[in-house]
Length: 525
Image (cartoon, rainbow, N blue to C red; front, side, top):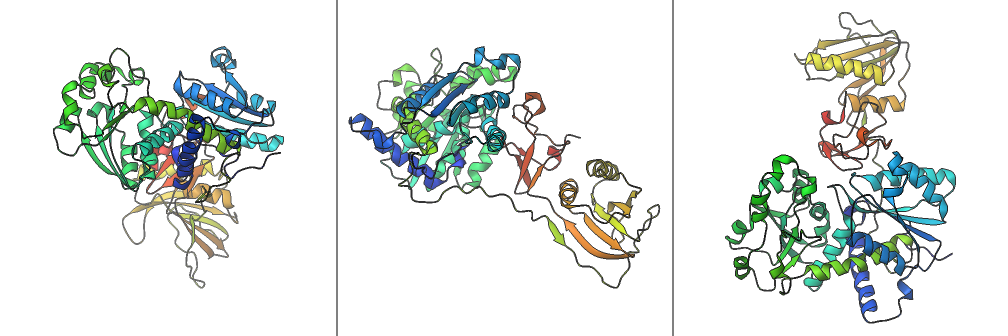
């Protein structure tokens, strides 16, 4: 058995699955490997060299460069490479990805799955479900590499892009000024830059696109949160008409296959806004480079053919860099690279269950705040302040939801009342002879009605009072769901992935597709 590097067994579903230090290592190691390959030096120090490593390429969406560069990178490591023929597989019989991979994962001692899909969050979901299956079956959990999922992210493309930018800047990470132009709405390679550009200390981003192709608010806000300086322009003409023009441009094609009819009707105008013309060139800074993840639309490219032989062409070398960066990425998760890594490793922290706050009680007072129609509790529990501040109708629905989700099938009383201290209405549930709820139900209650209080009553006295806050995660509920129909956890995908949401600031994000939700959005009922 070969020794295992610090990245062994890792999966990469999104760019921030690697810390800034880990990304920097990937780029510097890629530079080493590229130089060794081009100079014809011995490559054994960079190779995994073990045919018991199986690399599966599962491309459920068409690809040329990503697929072939990953395939050749796996061949470089002398692994056993399987290109999965999705068109003639059990997928045509409606088999789920999870069931397919349960079969494949048992065929070798160690596996890496490289997956490209139109469905978002696939690799993160498989990392969870297949990882759990492998641990129970005594099989080494595989690594998963996201080769592009819907309009979510494309991390390995981002790594080769950042590597190409660093080459252009002679490895100076102090600052970057970049113009992103083309289809910023559907272009997942642009979305990955919200985190990928953090490799530079100071980041200025100019978004050059008509509003119909503009960057989604989620990624725009993430860039702002990451400290990027953003400017917005409706066209290349408008951008070049002002004085501060970037010397590094990143183009994306108009992804017509993803657009709705309302946008397709405007394609001519949209293309004109983001397509380079000869009269643009003399307005560019000296040393400007154009980059593009490719492919281009050969009949109507955003970078026309007249640019190809010019020094502006940075995309040919960028495309070539995909092979070298993916050699490094596979080598890292396979465990043969990383022994010389120094820096901060990614730590997967489980959110703390910090949602229960112990309240103060009067040890001599009795629990006498009974409402009309509410049965007094000598011994039992009282859930108070439910949905406080909401409408009466909303609180009644919430009371019913709490009763059903917590399975409170007891003789009990509940109602909606005005608070004693104000005119604000609130809900209350009174359950006699129930000593406690249990931790799981308390967590569900906190998710359903953050801000409520749970009172434990003994001999007419409140012996414990808890105020419940919003939990860090909401999951294992029948009545939650991601609003993104293209998410792997959405019921329309039939993948059997349980929805899960993580608290981010004042809202929540889907664990799999990272779509932001408000608290109310996550509830399907």
